[in-house]
Image 1 (cartoon, rainbow, N blue to C red):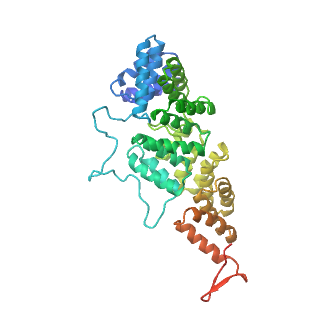
Image 2: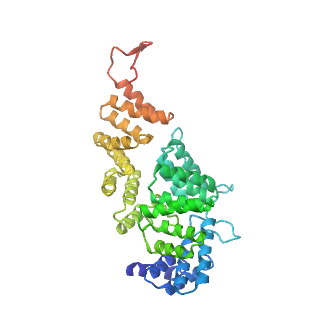
Image 3: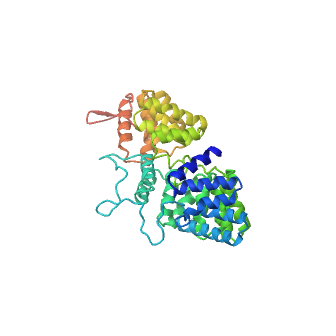
Length: 425
């Protein structure tokens, strides 16, 4: 912690009102049992800070110094901050001031930060999701539209569902956010972050008991899960259990495990890395070499830049860290296919298609890999599976046509107008 403390102190010296650095330094003081130093670090932010973590840090520090009444007020402030802005951002405008985080075009609409699809092209669900991640902070409404498009293509896309729920929370659409998170929990009942955000959404909806159940499960599934403990402290305070609230806040502030890949205002696992360049990702990996999400993001970044061979290493590392990581299997399969190794692509994409048969992009790419490997008969089934879920996927339709035309002719072929049409398999 000594090196981290020195780095945060240098950051504050350069920018005295840097909220993130001050909050991180205050957490270090809290972990070292220095409540007075933690409060002194936070004091310059008093006029601008409205975040959950800021108020919880003040609450535990004030309580440690014997200032019970002020500690209770800080807990009240933390609960109010959660209900006002569940995403706990640092860039919110002060009361009475207009928002400044959304960039506007000259006609008053939101700027088109994310490129639209090319004419006649239907982007994959993952492309919509990554585009939404890049604009989430600046234009949550546009991010919401992208995520809705992703879910229309793949209704079981967990990542898109969670991000859309968070966009809804930020935009004040709490009822839909709650529905989205309930469905996300059905898809992944043991995913700690889903449970944590679900707990906060339930608290915002007034369901304290339901919020407590989700958050208790999140910290049971993932020991030391800081966000889960912090959100649970809010529920305990809302229940009138202030001692338990302070205990949960201490656990949430002492733990460093928030499932985040890189520090960012929006602490969602894997989200903040989408807009990072390769230097940022490499810096993150220097700090957290065991983070599979960071390796995946680096591989994707290199694939997007056309560096196919260089993308393999981080994708393989991601799979070594998390062997069943479907997204890494898919991206590595895509890289292998583009590099002319269809058999290896078939092996990787076949795993994804077996484990997630509803993933349209994986089925379509598996069909293409089999077609390129000279197995048109094997390509037909995954291509048809993709088209059943997404009939407008033109690339899969073309591949299926080539696969059917490449099948050997048999006596059962149907002749129409002098042409041979292979019967369906």
